[in-house]
Amino acid sequence: MSSPSQPPLASLSLTHVHYNPTDPLSHLSAYLALAPQALCVAYATLLWSTREAEIFLLFTGQLACEVLNFVLKRWIKEARPKQMHGRGYGMPSSHAQFAAFFAVSLALFLLLRQRVAGAASTRGRVGRMLLALLVLLGAAGVAGSRVYLNYHTPKQVLVGWSAGAAFAGVWFLVTAGIRGSGVLGWALDTPLARVLRVRDLVVTEDLADAGWEKWCRRRRLEIGQEKKVG
Image 1: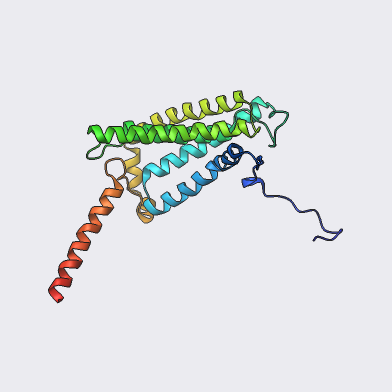
Image 2 (image 1 turned 180 degrees about the vertical axis):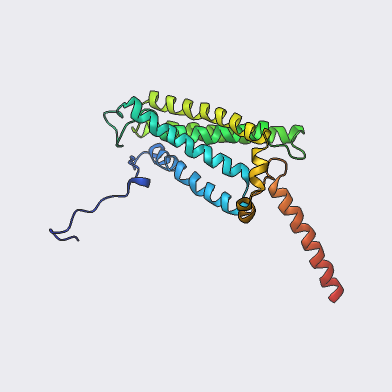
């Protein structure tokens, strides 16, 4: 307990979400509201573990989308709902915009950019379409949770989702230009990129399959050596 001379304790609002504990849907919405934080952790993990240029480009676009949301909120200056539990301006919803940018960007990557062996088969196309649909539905769930928890109005969420989706389309074209103009190839040959071991494989290679094949080859060699020793 703090003494009267000490200032009152504050709450870290980064992951602080108000919800109705007796309502299962409200509880689920509270977890969905943490999606942006979870995605940032995923970005950091993938950037460190894969060093893929496409992940760098996607994360850069995600940050730019957040800057756009910051500017739009302070330009429009629309308040949150009267029964709201959040602070600051509400138009457009940053959660909806964040989730929409990620979902649409990933869908565009899966359906239009990535070219791996087997992707052209019917099974490959269906799998990629289902994954894209699942991610888009997840983003819609994040957006809906903001209305259900009274952090935003439906209009604020719709505008946020539309802004995120539109910016994802624009960023997809920007990165296509970066790739097509040779800028990305030049950047990958710079000393900094080589020190960081940045590569551009995920567009043409399934990293999971490539890693599995490498493991299988290594395991066969180990088993062969064990048989020779035995």
